[in-house]
Image 1 (cartoon, helix red, strand yellow):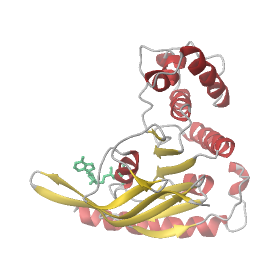
Image 2 (cartoon, protein in one colour):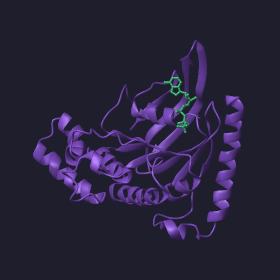
Image 3 (tube, helix red, strand yellow):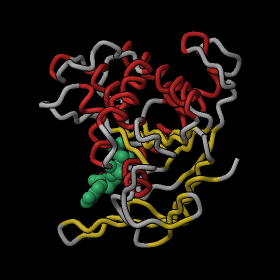
Image 4 (spheres, helix red, strand yellow):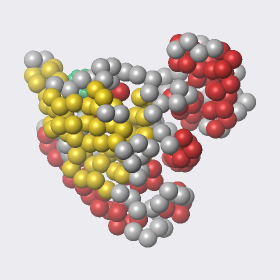
Length: 262
Ligand SMILES: Nc1ncnc2c1ncn2[C@@H]1O[C@H](COP(=O)(O)OP(=O)(O)OP(=O)(O)O)[C@@H](O)[C@H]1O
């Protein structure tokens, strides 16, 4: 597999109230084309900042980020993002929310609608295209956000705790849906979470981050193969051990982060 995203020796500081906060220090990571990578780490270690840099919203002071071997200077539809909040336009229907980006890029309504209907079916929202966002549950809204993000056929999708606000059952359904959509499309994914079980179910590769200033301190490859069943996974050979190992590392870094926060 060739690398699609390369983050090379990146250091990023924010200045707040005349104080400098080093959020990331000499961070390097790469995403191979078509890979599903999960970034796991304590709150405040800089996970969202990494996504924001790859999306093109924030620039590092040192180091560089390459997409398909080239530097870039801002956001681009080939790098899509899904946030914890679905952020739908309340005055637009489900269908018009999903097609909004494509229409802004100049695609015809007929073509955009056709592609959106395929995606709405794929995320289990067939028949809901004329609904308004307020008529949907939290999980359904996040399905709309997923269809919207995938519609322009991005090469990479960046997901920032997209299921963090959902109840446990809905969350599991969304995890299954995401993995199945990823397997159908082959999109490169970088997914941020605090949740070890979520990381183990979703990832080809887990990158564990240290307390701030964030660095990648460990890489884990869950050895569960491409076909995963969320219920069977907990009984899979090696699952308990790998979960214990990852949990221990994440909790150690979370304690360090708490100490650093004072
Ligand atoms: N625009 C900004 N200006 C100043 N400080 C910022 C800015 N964005 C983020 N930070 C700080 O950078 C640090 C890392 O933030 P970030 O959101 O990347 O962490 P995170 O690991 O995603 O946390 P969480 O898991 O809680 O979402 C935090 O201390 C945050 O307060």
